[in-house]
Amino acid sequence: MGILESAPALGESRSSGTLSGMDAGAGQVRSGEKRVGSEGGGKRSNLLIFGLGNTLLCDDGIGIYLGRRVSALLSGEDGCTGPRADFVEASLAGLQLLDYIVGYESLVIIDAIQTADGVAGQLYSFGEEELAATVRLTSVHDINLATALQLGRRLGMQIPSRVLIYAVEAKDIFTFQESCTPELNAVIPDLAVRICLDIREKYAG
Image 1 (cartoon, helix red, strand yellow):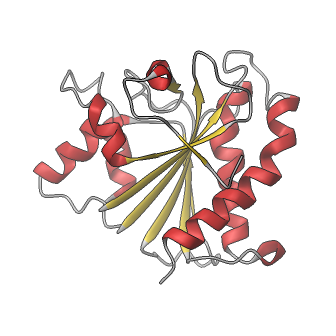
Image 2 (tube, one colour; image 1 turned 135 degrees about the vertical axis):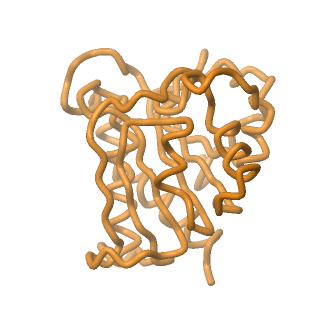
Image 3 (tube, one colour; image 1 turned 45 degrees about the vertical axis):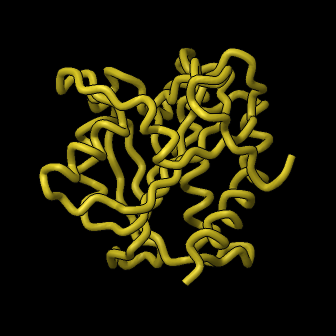
């Protein structure tokens, strides 16, 4: 597999996949949020790395664990520098995301996903244009990411113009366990480097 495996367009076999932190009805906060600057001073940058998930539910925490590692790498750890970025970790979705992303030019979301035939640890990437196929207006308690982004723009909010999502195939998102399955723990270092390099390529300058 190359640096990333791009997810097929929605409507193909992968369309049954569920992003665990961004599924419909996931607008309720499930745990605390944390925001840090990439250089430790909390100074706002143009790029936000958002790790989504719940670290109490096994592989559902992969977005947070992986986001932490990617943030560290972009800050220069292990020599994998990249564009300056802020990092947020949280277990929320939908409209509540808007409070965190307003004012940033670019947004990178890292989350877990479960598809019909995926292999645990497999990495996918989505652009906002692919998410657009899922847009649907429902109640404020049942809203997906694409709808939230569109609504924010319609309200005149400064929503990031560039949105990229990295999703990792999860094996178990239901067991109460404060660590991922061995399959996912084993690939976190490699996936973090892949994502770091991809971000560096896409957001250079």
